Length: 173
Image (cartoon, rainbow, N blue to C red; front, side, top):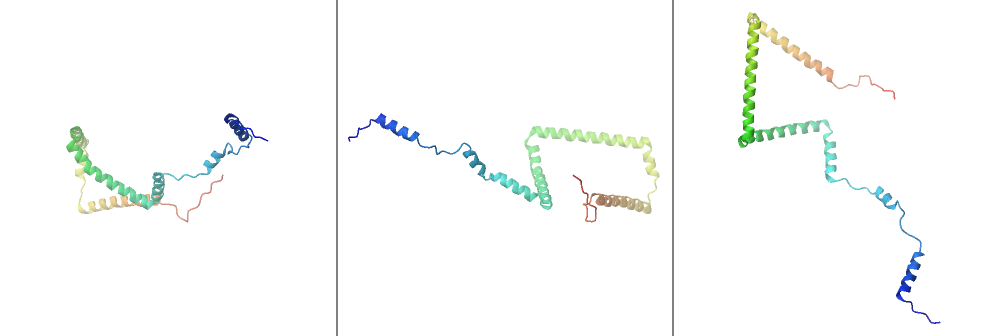
């Protein structure tokens, strides 16, 4: 039996027909989504560093040390930058001179008003009539110190953390 040579078009049709009869072996519709849901991408380095720093600063002593260091560095930066700005910026120098002059005038007027009020109200005469000998000054100083210490001790007891002998509060859900 002689075999007939197929033309290129017939051969292409035969191959395409044979391939179309093969079963589909592709992934299901949700395959890519399921794979991507399992993939855990590492967090970006800045985010990891932020979380580490936040965890490190969560301890009270470290947070206090950080706040103190920040205050020192901010103060040092202001000590350097403010004089530089006053020397190199005419607008800032003018505004600061105006603000200082206005503040000095306000302070002067307030002091003069308070002084005239004390004289006109008779308060100066009352203060002059109070005899301040050495024993009375010591009693006054001791009383003021005791009042201040009593206030500080009272605040210490009011603001202290709960201790073990305090009753626990249970909240009913």
